[in-house]
Length: 266
Length: 191
Image 1: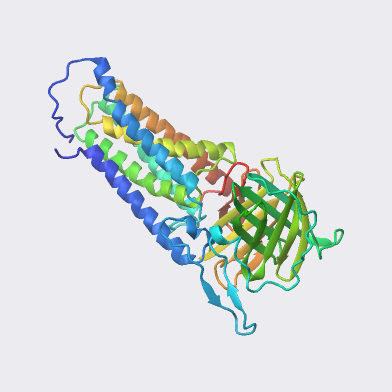
Image 2 (image 1 turned 90 degrees about the horizontal axis):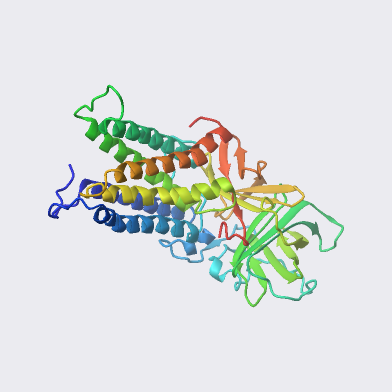
């Protein structure tokens, strides 16, 4: 018995869907061979790619490994000044929580971080963290909570350590020669938090990240060519948290809230 | 057009006709569930395959969805003509073909939009609009599957197909309002 034409229509649609899916996988994985999320996409293997560093430094830059192993790896180009005495070390990082706060620079509270903020979202044992100053700093961290501790390495030696105590997360971030400390409360409002968007803007892959605090304070950076050895960080256009959108010079940007509480973006 | 059913003539039994909807409904439900689970589990990449001629994926999707909705409107009108529901219009001989092809085009326009959404953005819940859109987006393909699978079945009650078609159409229109209409009114209408 021949399949009826409606079934053929359905199969044609399914075939088209699979074709678009395969094309998407190929296009995004070739455009982003070291995408830290590649480990979760079925068609691309989660391998760590090590690129040669610029000749001037002579060091080796290790790009972020897949999320599953990020917490265990040590950044090869980490600054030598990682503090060994973390504040208020106690408690395990709970699952499904979001934190965000402005940071202080230099490890001393009171000294301003020039508007920089940090956000950490934990969903189950998966964690996404982001630090940016809306100017030249924009760093993403992906990894897992191990033994109740969160200790993530990002690109170019960036590093974040988080300690949890009584509904607050405190920790250190090292990024681009800056050393920030933070003490971030648990977020509850559904507009505040960490927003992410990856878009092609005039042919260039750009990863946007915004941190929106409960008091309405917002800071965002845009990272052009985020997977290359030399990503460029610029200020992000303002995000409208009501719609989760931004307008980058006429290109519509739709952001996703990265929320450990709801699991959105994980 | 439709294949001959190899079942012997079915007695006019409503319960038997309704029973024929069970398997298509289960398959449709499975389709919707599969899309939703994939959209939830796959980490959104932000970008999917880009379509030439559009400034961003949002515009590409919005225009494709608008095209699908326009063809869906053709679906409703041609169906009304086929059922003789439009006064003083008798169904021309080509109306069946017009109905089938407008439906196929609408469906095939919607597929890349859905894959783009599921791959790039995923099933999200962070606002009412996004939640409604995510649910209806998955439901649409389930409902469409049900409608297509009951299409060649003989002996289903006469109201089933119009109701299924209306549900598919209404879901698509709601999807359009929760995405393309929102997108155009937020960012303006251009390519």
